Length: 486
Length: 95
Image 1 (cartoon, rainbow over the protein chains, first blue to last red):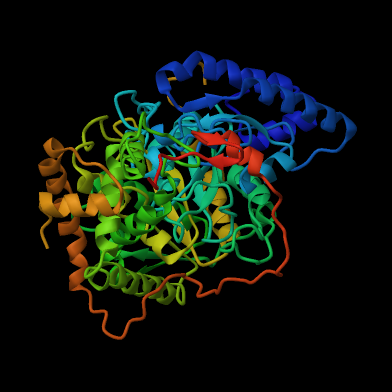
Image 2 (cartoon, chains in turn orange, red):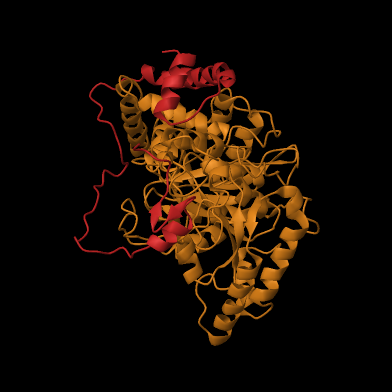
């Protein structure tokens, strides 16, 4: 069953080929068998999963099935889940039992989804390798000595190893797309504001966005259909009509114009990475798309702008972890100052502390104009570059990540080199655009991905382009040897 | 604008983080690496460019001025590291 896509499993449940309980037990058994080595889950919620599966089977029998009824889903441990530990990959929240449930989780449950558990991630979603997690690094199922990417590394690895058929992730600078590329799966970051952030532990609030991760674009469309929509509890959630994403998959792509930003194929890029993405674009040309060259001149400043804006917002967001109301508290505080300082220093890991310090410095008196204000100005230049490109093209394409999965430990002590893992993904977050990463071939047995960026609210179009590509190719169907019979 | 141990100590205090003296030099180096990368922003010509806080230039909606949130005091106390009689406990702040 685990080799099937979410869409195929949905059909199997509808046909009564198997029950949701059988399906859920199958994935729980796989997690039990293989996740000791992979470490893709922080918490497995077997009992509630089986209870939800039984409820789903009853709903299926009664003809009351929702969009996701009976389908097992793994949620990133950044989403609050009432009564279940929600750690965000941090010692700070190791004992935190969320008192409420995130909108994304609630909406998927309302459509009948079964929650398998909570997936591992970089601490507070800060990282591109999953090595900053308090719960230890996740391994890449294609090579256990390599990283799965991050920050949604647990989600991507469990999908890659077929320990779950669908997952949620979040993407602040590439945290859905980069791990999707490194694990040979498909992941979509929607338009900023398309999916509610309520109950999603905040990292950089003007950039954070939740999205679906799965084996195919079709699976992502199915999950996004349940996740998207306005939420009055998130003031940045946009009150725009939700498109029919599954319906969008029947659209024609002949006449589609693909823009190739020259900045996504720099001379310094690994030739094999460039070749795989160019080959994917050629495949879409065969299906009737036109290709034109475009330029995004300011995108080269996206990583520097991001590493001011994201830490600045993080330093503010993470000030709530003070050892008073929830989260880690130090032993025997001498006074309130000592309580704050020791609780925070013990609770946060090194990368989180670095980012809080960078953000605090950038926002401190005398530096605001040079850093934060300037970064927000550059952000507008980047957004305007994309807007000009979208006057001429429907989508933009290029490699998702500049390299395949690197070895565990390789970049751990060199933050700036780690930050470059997101060089092609960060601009999209700064501009608030939707973008998807899909599998487009291998280099030395390791997966590579290609990114499709669309205009605001064009998730349906991006998903359709990826779906057409996946109907014509089978890269996305390749699974690693890890995980037994595939 | 290089960061040294003294600046690290100041910024750490602002962020209510404790930095051990032994770690301060290595931390300064890492922070300087990050700021050197970030300094590429100085190349940008941003004269007359308005800072952008939201890509779609939307404004924050207003809601009706009525009570909409339930009382979750008990739930909030349940997850607090130290609480008593519906209040969070902290070390004494007034002698």
